[in-house]
Image: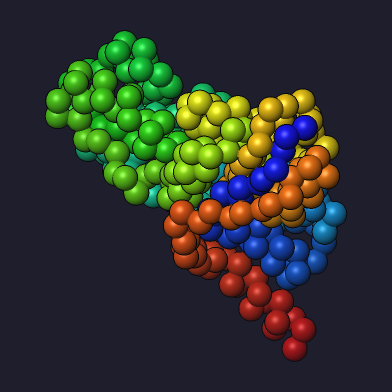
Length: 320
């Protein structure tokens, strides 16, 4: 085997929205007696979910599984108004861990719907974020997954069309679709660049950078992680071998036959310890040098929700 060098992409791993969501669950566990319930995966990574479950979090698919009056946390991907209404009917205490960037897109969807626009949502059918966003204005939103969808979509008023995007897509992911929509609807209100998750774009740009030297690129992330899948596609689009793995034991040494340099990155929901385990495995396969290429520094932080602050205050009062 000719493997010599590992290049670590940076930025990689947790984004601010994921860090915030995990912290919300961990702090809630400290301040609430009895179990807390999390609707869906808090973020799309089984290692994160398993770790929080071990600390006492109970993960459920539907709010019907949450006993009345208990605390329920909504995942970082966001939920529709119908889910909030269901929680109210069940008298659940709720902490919403939706990423603020997703919340911004929800606000835009509601505003466009009020103003009478047909909303074209660029995203992937069935993704938790897309389900939540479409629920904000189901009569007004059309899902656009491909350029073919963009060519075919029909709207009642071609002068009142607005586009929004799933945040975990990049500008590169959406550019071709938006170009088609702009050609078909010249007065299209295009999505704000702020709708695209900064972390998604940064991680894709970092993969492009390391692909200039790395002949194969490993992306650490879950199979249902949209941004991780996109990272593999970026690597392949750069002419490199891209592989999505959940952890180090999924590495196949045959991937590196004739490969001198391998790149490593991780999706926005993948913990850093998984990256270090992959590096150790690659070193056992012969790599002797590790370099980290930092493309841009990330210093984004999101505040915690008021409901969590109130929980903490109540906990301190009870202890006093």
